Length: 161
Image (cartoon, rainbow, N blue to C red; front, side, top):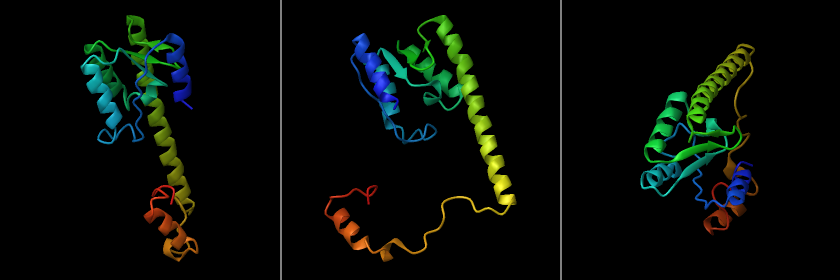
């Protein structure tokens, strides 16, 4: 959903594209290999501009976002948010970035608080949280031998299995 509009903008502007996509949580810096590669490429001047979908995809907190922005700026790399019309290559853009990064952090914290309060209320009402337990182990499922054979033959990935 996010990549297609970003690709369209880059194509419309004639930019050459290098995509850095992580599937790890933003808080999992070790799992964010593409993020580390982006920072390294920025440091070596292989990137001029970083285009993100939204600021909350850029950093986990306002402090994180500002530190990453500073690191990019030190390398001469700008940051642009597609959906929020923020371009940090100008002083006004950096001001708006700082304000929105703080707002994004506050939104994340409010959501976290609401979820925790809802879970506590559900527990107090005796509701069971999380995914229901399996009725029987996977090995007892009638299709288990077929799936296992396809997995061992390389026809299925673990996720698909």
